[in-house]
Image 1 (cartoon, helix red, strand yellow):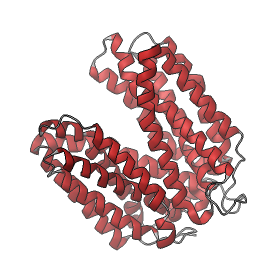
Image 2 (tube, rainbow, N blue to C red; image 1 turned 30 degrees about the vertical axis):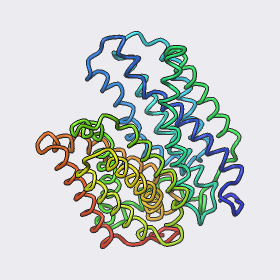
Image 3 (cartoon, rainbow, N blue to C red; image 1 turned 135 degrees about the horizontal axis):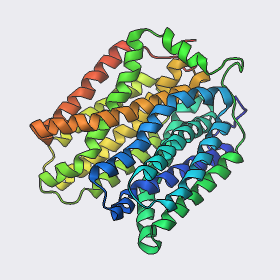
Image 4 (tube, rainbow, N blue to C red; image 1 turned 45 degrees about the horizontal axis):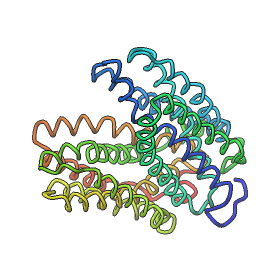
Length: 394
């Protein structure tokens, strides 16, 4: 590992973090793409397919490119992903319908995002002190939260003032800024012997006991599913109980998540991963149960704040648990695996819990969601080993 200062806030870390922030900001502008597509009178299923293919492709390519990140280097892979995005985004100016062409473009943005996001996060974590891995992951998460909050607000104003053409131009400008930040950041190297290659991650994964593989995969997926159930249906749930304003829920959720990651992002570095994962998942589960009983605006705000608090705690601890289990020499693969499991959980959990809400209503759906993560949390706490900081399996 390259030499680092004791402080987390070294210049290389800040520059790489800015690279991730601009990358995330560029893609978050596309939350308004459905409004652009509406002018072509598409069906809702067409819009859903065009928007959804981005995530499907990103989930699929992350584990593949996770190996290359460990083998070829973080910086080169990050720049290649950002470069692909820079070639793709200007082509949105040529979109004239909601058919095959925008579907192909969104597939390419999913490919570029899946490649560049994982490589850039890995690079940021490499540039932090090794004993503050979870804290650095928390800070990277903050950058993503801020970008995802600012992007749609900025996009809305740009479209209102200048039209969609400048939305695509601004996205390209942010990508250019991201590319420059990563280009001028020193390449980081593997945590251990450079003779190892990316296939080590697969060999290590295959050597793990089936129970540990199940535990390592299930809790991120369940967490993603519960996160999807919580945030994707809260607006509809709020309307069903007569609450018209749900925006403050998301504001307090994001505020609490950001605050917690600054304050508690490094707790698992000091006390161990499982000692933080258990209370974090417990908070999330109990809060979802509380959400099922919300009756007024202030209860909704409290649910948003507590949910963000739990999210701010669990992401750094659970992601670094996967890294420590597979070994930090396989950090790129471990991060790509964790992110793919979480996103897959959100993708599968939303329709599943939507189906439950159709059958039993929103309150019962949230009760079942809360009980699900509580049960998996207890099972994980009892059965999963606490990895060493340098990797449970060597």
